[in-house]
Image (cartoon, rainbow, N blue to C red; front, top):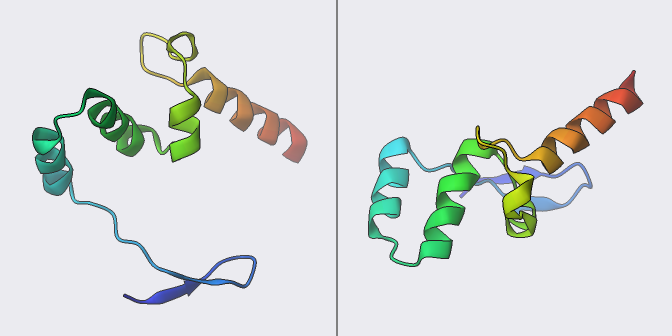
Length: 81
């Protein structure tokens, strides 16, 4: 697997994303409800593991938008302006 350089200068292995077909197959085979929920959220939101684990029901609106993440992005954009 090819190596890539992180902004910190550390070398790390480059990762390859799952194809849509691989994601679907994985979802079909996972039996654990929590794991399945995690696997449904991650690829569709771009959220990291810690962000998903920290989610609470009230953090998600009907359109499945994670309010905490939106809040963080808005704060970051304000800092750039």
